[in-house]
Length: 352
Image (cartoon, rainbow, N blue to C red; front, side):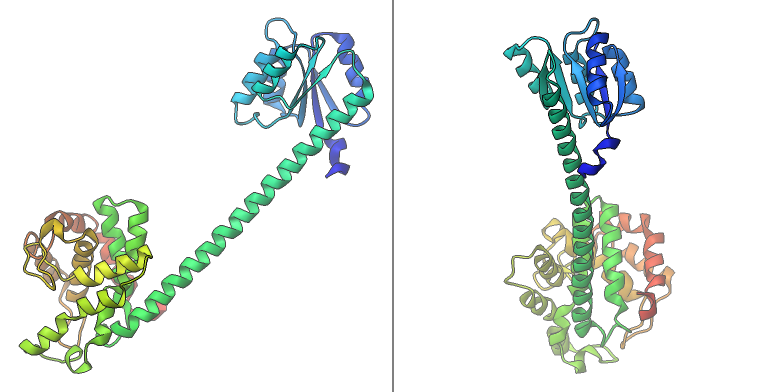
């Protein structure tokens, strides 16, 4: 970086031509120089072509160096430019004020040329080092975000694949869990949930039926209605799922457990396994319930054919205030085009 210092642009701000001539003579062989003879002229030059460093006289008419420094440091576009104050008086109060305004150094008059050159070179080197560090930090941040995205994608893929162990037997090719993920996120957003909650539901919803892994195929794949004993067994997939997902501090796993346990609860209290009603049912469970019912109605299962869309929508509307949260039902119909798009997009593995 040091070999590039000769390309540095240094702005000299001083209302006295004699001082300007000395500074120019001392620095012209090493840097690209520009000169401003007043505070206003300095601000105009910096705005048009920001320099890499400013040598700024304190005692100037109309606008002194402290005022110029304050304006430059208040503007995000110029706040990082290093400023070295030039002062004829070795006044501790003036020097302290300069540092408090953001200056990096000060040089007293009359100038000692070797010291002047050394300080300018030092602060330019520091500026380039800081710029290089900032650039490295930006690149590191990009790599971290890319790696985080890769890990999140991998985690979600693992969740999908493990959830399919329970799902694929009775839900065509397992696309039900893909559709559930996207539908839950869309409905949560329509309800007003923040982005973090929407993403959490997106990632947790594939686990809502993980408890089906403990249900015998003779029940899960039965082509006709279940008898009372079989239905009792079938209902246990909620508590089995909650048990499988219990005992971990991860918010994702906890949300998966909530969805597994409560996605068959009903607004009027007639659901299972706990008979919860209204807002006693966690929001995630209420959202998953609508998405699960809509996708189940419009999908072919071992025990039924897929319902026509219009019939499924009539059923959703009829369940408002009974099985389903009425406010969420209204949100469901507001975002229905997006939900239908998800339904149409995830029909087979090639569309994943």
